[in-house]
Image (cartoon, rainbow, N blue to C red; front, side, top):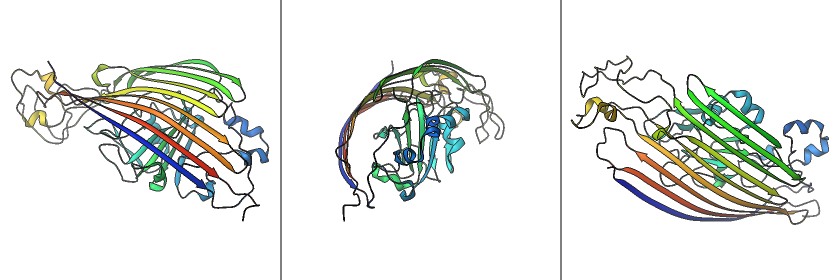
Length: 390
């Protein structure tokens, strides 16, 4: 019977920020982004286009793109669909300059920016609709990136470098911010089924959106995937004689023992994602649930260590397994108090649960369970001076 280790951490975080723009300019009314996507920009007048406000993950407030001291890659829904990427990792690897994806024996694949990388994915922030989703205790931003489900994403923005440090600790290498659909940006219903043949997976996604009025709507999304991974060759970079019931390993030649596929789901569990969004005027509520994880391949200690007699070869060569589960609920309020003052409020609750089973060579080690709860509050008041201010 496996022993279990549990740990729980609770954080309460708050921020209150008052921001004033540096340049004095006449205030322009803010227009919502078109409900039908970027196609509607074609029919907008030049004056309307100038009044469209675009929030950047480079900071907590809207900033003129010419004044942003950042390097940023912005991907819209066309980029996502035309890329053919199976998951967020592959999408970022295709489009983002100087971004690296590294396969490692600890947790899932790691993301690095400009040579900055960590086996805990704690050097960058992963955000959904501007809310940071990182696990602070253990695995950092090791969530959602390997799920082959992208149907809820409307856009992806990536800040490369530390210029987005206003979002808090962890934004050393950059920020990945994904924007989801809402009832104002997606209407109708569809079902999509995908099948991966080499990197094997089966994924099904369902979407429904309805717009009740110009300022209110609802969006529902659910996706589920069975991930088997790729049966690719694997190399252990040192020669070993036959031992522990394993065939001899020759450096430079494929390993011949039992092992998991690359990218295979951890604990043989499904991967899934659900998202709910409701917008009504200045109020927006959204809730999100994700479950992912993977099983690693064995490390060289399967040869270097001595296998106990009561442990099977299949158990001995099992790689480390992990599973992430995250639930987030957030409510926001955005209101223009006057022609020069705007108020933004955000309240969220997040729970991140992690299960970790060490590799087969760690005989007798407990399956670890850890969870982290976060209550987050943010208030931002933005004052934009006009020509009457001196």
